Length: 296
Image 1 (cartoon, rainbow, N blue to C red):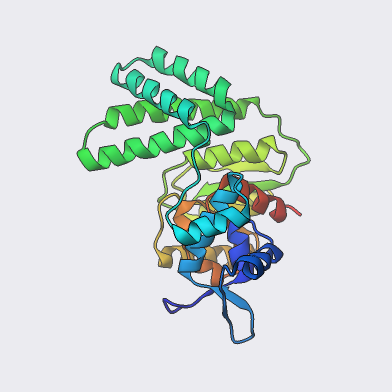
Image 2: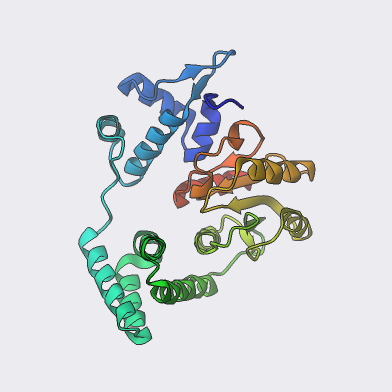
């Protein structure tokens, strides 16, 4: 595929959980997005349009009306939705940093308990824990310091994720979906959270595989587990050649149209336009919509 080849409207809609009619309405009312046309006359979008669409979807998910979100993004492509309950999130962040600096597991546990009660499970994980974990990781990469704090925080967040999973009653009649990190991907916490959301909404019975498995073992475990689909997660973008190889193995094994790629590592992947796979852009709500479609 050449660098400037565009992606069809159906694939873009699948990436962001959009109805094609919604995109056409945006185009008619707000003159965005402005598509190119394939040889057959179908709408296609390039990387720049897809990036802007992702910003608009983030704003509309946060409650901003399209008529406000689209002009905001067109005027300032880097705009982000305001954080939910920003004052509370900032206060909890400071308390967590203090607990980590004090090396106090008790203090950290107390802050986590208060934050969970205030924000709820999903709000705690998505708006506080994961952004803080990313920031701690960036600080460690930039300075070489803080690895102990990052590890302590990771362990505490993992316990919250596992504790939530123990509360969920999964229906035996629900279809099975494999949840796996792509080979060489070790960041499993987002996948654990997605598993919890999927199970709690009775979308599917998650078949959770350990990180680090080769693709052939993921495929074999999915077959033996009676899965109807495979969800592959990547937080760090894998190489295009690796992604193509993994997807081709799934398709050759009979999983055509039953493979979903999710997570920020796949946001700009061009494999969506080359293979019959499903796509989600990293937003958990969008991914749940995709998983529902896979179980129909």
